[in-house]
Image (tube, rainbow, N blue to C red; front, side, top):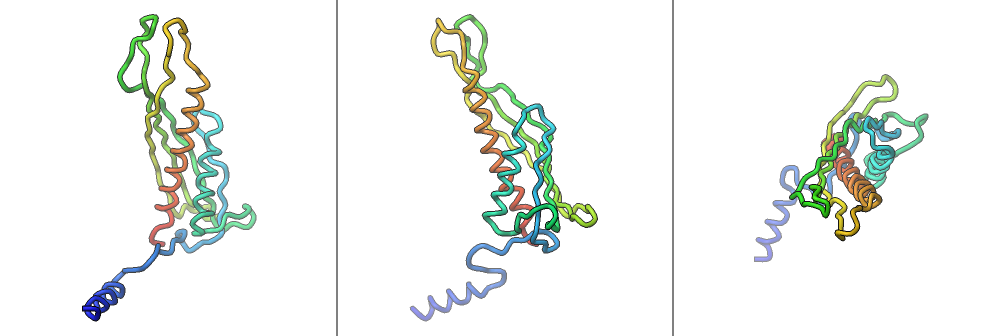
Length: 181
């Protein structure tokens, strides 16, 4: 029985395209030195480009699929653009203390483009578009006598969700860009 189990283990491990651990990842064209300039932000939401840029840099530092270097030393450049950001009220509507209908949640939708360019001739080696959606709870009026909501909560909730979406979208961009090359 032990020999049979050992035989099966060796047979399956030497099978076609089977590897232990994660496969080696790399950039298209085998490039190793890259730069990631700050993303272009085409939306009205200021400052979110930093979250996307940092999230992509962090993915490459984790994976070691390429080394992030100064622009003068890079072979390729990964350029990103946040093309749209939308907030849509959703969830069940509630009537506030003054009879105003309030949204109980919002949905954030973000569209991002990412392109890998060779520095020497500016040729695009890879490009992709990514979309993320996530809901978050809207600030609520808690007492009938107070007809206010906390605008700082709303801003904070939006920014936290955008940061999480940036991490998720840039992880997907990294994975799609570095697979099978």
